Length: 486
Image (spheres, rainbow, N blue to C red):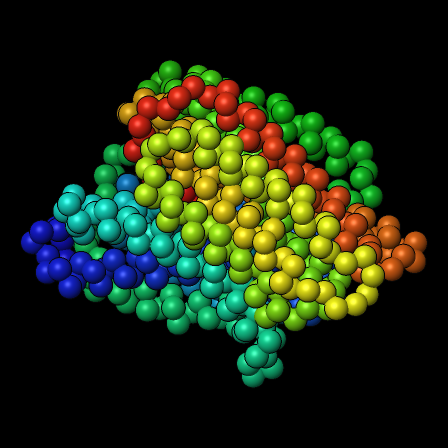
């Protein structure tokens, strides 16, 4: 099957589209489904707090670091080939996760999953123009947004159900193993129906830039996640300090390649765009408060208050419904009132974080799941309200020729922001739990207080976002690539 659209039967094109959606859904649901399994993983492996953080963070980090270069490799080697390879790697990584005999093996398998996710995700939107004529693409792109919303709703519930069912005594393992048959279906569909899109072998890939970016990121992330576990020795702080000169080397390398007319991992033109850089910081602020929030909330509900994984997943559904509802409304509003919508979204998220401590119990007893509905729904509305206009506003600050690179860069920084926030909130949360339990305090109160302290970080991020967005000029209409779901 060659790269066509109008010449290809409509049924074949929509089957190909279904294969793309299934793969994207599998990737997105894996982000949300893991959170409800964290307490089960901790019990099964007697894992340390930092090991549990790595289960979540390593996937986000790997995905973020490889998103840009894998998109470039797709252009070079062929998008269909890269997409199928990515689904294969992700499916294999899921099988490794489900069969992992130890927590360290699970963390390594999550790296494989992250590589597969980064390989397939940039190709999905890029394949759509080969399937559909311009007049048909609106519905196709809308389906990606719908898929993301459904994944955010389905993930926690499906994860809780699979763990609670304890299929064949496998406990948490089915949350990963379920990806295997789904991935095989997506591979078969892609092989049969996705068009063969030849790549441009003349395109360059900045491999040194990739390595420098990875080293810089790890010099920041490793100390934040492992620092408390190893007692904050001097070398941990030395690593964080070393991240600054490594960042300078990365920027210098990108500028050098730009002067030589060579491809850059992050185009230098974006470095020089002050508004884009400020906007990138705002996006990192937004997404820094989301993954860490769901991690600590799942632990509070399950370990701190005795919820089952299914009860925990059902409790968080109002947030996902809020995201879905706000995303639908955002699509209808288009490019109107962008900055006010972003500020409103940040304020709603901050309100959610402020209200939650008032409904978490301070002593053992029946906890009301219904009490979480309004704050979590407000938070979901906030996230769904802010995402689309935020990306549109930031991309509106760059020239049209740089929109593609800028969109990919923003999605990478979105994931890095999530990893950074996860590390910081995890440090605050687990440190307070350790000190509180060691002092003999009431377990429920310790977890509730730890949640309150962790939420200070996310609340500050969301309030800063709501205020800082007004520093950006009014955007020009931008061609928006779909961001990844939180």
